[in-house]
Image (cartoon, rainbow, N blue to C red; front, side, top):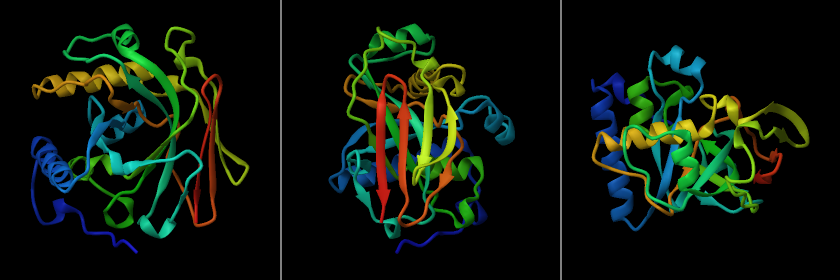
Length: 241
């Protein structure tokens, strides 16, 4: 069983730039140990949450190959600390995205497909409480994510209007649309590209980008079956055992 730790900020003072440095060092360590970077995730994409945390833009974390689970996979609840689930839209990029002035249209044109996703976030900190710098250093609470099987072209539908229902053990827990993510999830991806460009980095063809939670994060328990169903994108499911 994994064990929660005290906040890093309780013993060390560091700012957001240094927090991203901690994140980078952690991800470099994981990759040196044999893992592989496959994309990024956005966090704090709710305007209300940004106001609460007193920030003007979301935060991001990195996705590693070891974080990707299969649709319908059975995951051990004991391998997490206090897991929560969010329904999201994933962008599968077909072209590089670079620059600080990208638009939603630029993002959609660079995207090969959209996919339904469930992200499992799991803060390493006690009581799932943290400061902004702490959550950045913790790779934005990244843990696992699951992608659906249906690939949808961005040219066919307006992703912002897709209806979504999140159920746990068949009970409806939340509904929403991807417009809950900054008004349009492609806007979230454009903001990610902007943040990376400031560091001389870019999104690359083949990257997976989780645009941000459509609803609040919901805690899960052993035995829970989590299902997210999207109009046009189909469903995605994960089980906790």
